[in-house]
Image (cartoon, rainbow over all chains, first blue to last red; front, side, top):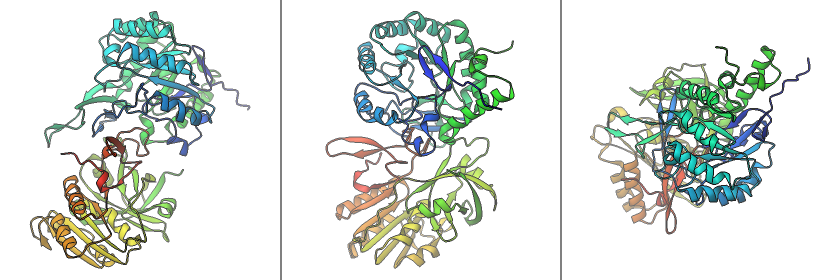
Length: 305
Length: 258
């Protein structure tokens, strides 16, 4: 039988050949994983979080393992947005996949400048990082209140010439309130969840394991929380939701689509299995074949209650 | 890339340390001294892979050895593997030690389980004279003495408590040996404090040295930026990454944490 399954999705004008995107901060700028598989297989790549100027990041150790997950406190180490445009976009454009630039800043003006620069760059969408838990200023400081989100998003919206995705933090009382604030301020789509703020302690030394004391939890451990938030948010807003948090395979992808996500991001799983992204796509396809599903849209929000 | 390989042998070295021989022709073929492999240890609580440096490579048989000390969840799970079990391994990764023909006399300095990568270095280094200094906590911790003996022109073992070989730290051995006669390069692997002292000793004698670092890793290939270490730049510092820029660095470039 001819394979007529359609994996393509369109998110606020961003067309993806399939709904699996590499999550920001787990995939660098794609170079490392290009040794393992053809990056053109991916729906998209959300690149390492960018800032106006290069950032050195946080002191080591930056990684702590937890049951079924990891804590990280990398702290947005990146070469800066200009180096990204000059050195990384030409590499990424060798592949047929969407480029999503993940942008962070310390101030509203930083976010405006980032969006202004990236709007003129050869990227397919901008993901506004309002949720990194590992930096002192900006990011989660804006992203953890509805008013903070409204302020940043409404300001950058005026300058943004690309689909604007706002990445939300789960470290709040009511994520739907933040989602609605982002939607009202002009976000084209939402991505969630960023990492959950956590901590690991070494009982032997009585010290924190992470150099930065606290860090962001990701991996299978956070999946139930992420699924719940994707489910709640996708019911609360009309704009598309990109779901992430502990996705490791095709079944996980299906679960997030059923919960209401229009696309997903896969990250931490790739540290353990460098083929996790490709296998997630193949697993989704196989599920669709087995369940007589011809289009991904049939699955989105298809949860039976 | 095929990640599934096979455990060929397990040899207990002491109470909590063992040598695992793995059949993986591609890794054995391309692996260099100082490089590492990233091993999926399995078990319910070891989510991430664990990096192990190549201890001995047998290219004819298509196998390599890693040295493992049981220290936590990952190594505990790894200790349960048996001969012929399949094992998920990525690599070889990292840069490896320099193998310069100009370095006629070399010294390798190993502390504890840091001795492992130095064995393959001795097996492959073209130097005509090789001095090996190994330090262990006590007699029970001494491993691979014979293998090192076979690949060295001179081997001295020290234990912290004097229960075997010379008493004291291996860094004191290094200092007195360099006093007797200098070498062209020193290769160091062991606990951070020991490496820091060894580097200082080499620096004082203006002898170039290389250190092999260990850090908690995420991906092992340079994507997650987890395994940062502080390195000196001409007038500043930056974070390098142990998995991709290392694990071997020139001793002078590393800013050891206090």
